[in-house]
Image (cartoon, rainbow, N blue to C red):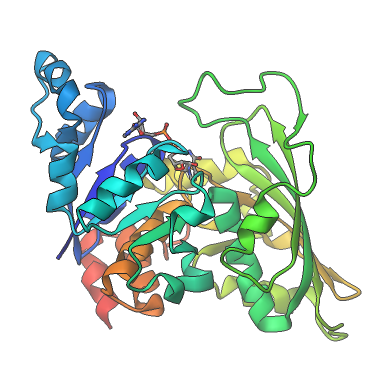
Amino acid sequence: MVGVGVNGYGTIGKRVADAIATQPDMDVVGVAKRSPDAGARSALSKGFSVYAPAERADRFDEAGIPLSGPVESLIDESDVIVDATPGGVGEQNAPQYAARDTPAIFQGAERHDVADASFVARANFDDAIGADRVRVVSCNTTGLARLLAPLDDAWGVERARVTLVRRGGDPAQPDRGPIDDILPDPIEIPSHHGPDVRTVLPDVDVDTMGVTVPATRMHLHAVSVTLDEAAPDLDEATVRDRLAAEPRLFLVPGDLGVESCGGLKEIAKDADRPRGDVWENCVWADSISVSDGEISCFQAIHQEADVVPENVDAVRAVTGLADADRSRRMTNVALGLDDRPVGPARDVREAGAADD
Ligand code: NAD
């Protein structure tokens, strides 16, 4: 079993810890918190050991939250650290991990060069094998890479143009906006997402524009992809079949009657997904159109969830636990991700079946 420590237990960290705990070949060594708040109590109630900076131990003591040690001990006791702290903090933490010889996985708000490789399992798993530092790219970049990689494999992507309609903040972020406005965000074009896709798919040309709206549920991408060579016989059904075969893409069937991001979240909750999480890209099947060598579609990305299976795969890559196909399959089975959001949650004990 590979022991994983999670430093930073917020939106992403708490989901990654839960996902690691469902894997048949990994254990959660513990999670590092800075404050003895509801998150720390939740971690304890799930059976996770809690660590904190030594200078903050008194605060946990006063709150009656038992600590298993300082953050340095978590790093020492873990085979791999997943750093899920806010952007820029991971870079500050990097020297501690290196000094203790513990491989680390960083998140999307860190700079690409904090790591040896940026990572999306579908795009470039092998770049992270045996690496000391890996950066799982942002939710939007992950969603784009997962869609563009299979299109590129099948028909060659000459250029993609994407408008990203970005959620203003996560549901637990009352200080994020806008409240009643629509922002070009960033005003500069392209946004950083296109260049970021190239950190995992270097040969794919992507232009992105960002717009931020007062929403918390998901991001929505309007995607147009020009193919390398005109494929005169290519039709919508062929593209749909190709995308439907991708494990982390959910092709939303038209007859489901789901016409909004809220509707997608609702079926995930109805399927008893943890926290109503949608780990897959959701591509509306009826939005797929093909015209003059160009494929267009809408996809929704649950920003809190899509990077979670990628973090699990990144742990397998750095430790050499499994190759890309096997890791992705194990992660998906253990999470119940292959059971589409409309299906029932799968018993995690079936995860062993991923071995075959
Ligand atoms: P968050 O604010 O929800 O959680 C961060 C956690 O780190 C909190 O528990 C906070 O208390 C803790 N923390 C703060 N300062 C710290 C420090 N100095 N040392 C240790 N812990 C500290 O943030 P998040 O949304 O989970 O984002 C974390 C990373 O994941 C960022 O790089 C972000 O870009 C990336 N990410 C976030 C989302 C998203 O939608 N929230 C999606 C994909 C990737």
